Image (cartoon, rainbow, N blue to C red):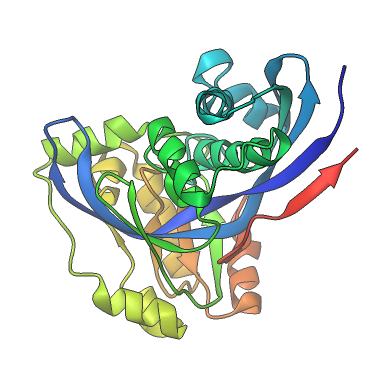
Length: 293
């Protein structure tokens, strides 16, 4: 038996900066990052059902790379919410993939956050944002930030969040076609000496003011050098973006995606048109809400 459905957009994110401060005794790292949701998004549809299951559809290559079973973050999110919900039910969770997998864009975390929001409504759990954030923290480090549905300044291992103000920006997104595991990226940072980037206040000021000329020169990611040392395509993607006029370029998250900042929409489109596989994305984006059935 199936019934009511709820659809949620699950926007990808970019890290406008990512600053790694230190390793922690629990195996994670303390960090700071400006996380901005972008227009590239998956779609998550939850439908009342007698049991709980996840279907991944969309681009064959993307769907093929999404973990199945208990490793799928949408399913992990559903099970975690069921533990916190007074009267959970079953549901079919359909994830329509558009975000590249393991690309530093938070696709799995976005799907988990969208699943939490949708099932909270479908099951009538009545959890407020704070309670949902507590659930999100148990799922993965990026999930709380994706739950906020807006730009945020992330700290701790990802669980400490403050809303951030970011003016509209246009980015050229290049995904080299392979993924990078976050644990590997942080391990390589440790192995290579663990350099920490500058105080980000000037970057935050430029992002809030929409001063893209200043912002372009301030982008940084402490994981980029160690990851690019193992994956030279990342450095080449960054160079290609800058050679074609991007105001700045940076790897997002643990990679392998690289984004270049455009001066405005047409400028970004001009850059994307001369780079194979590049697309233009805008930020900040918000998650949409919809119902079916």
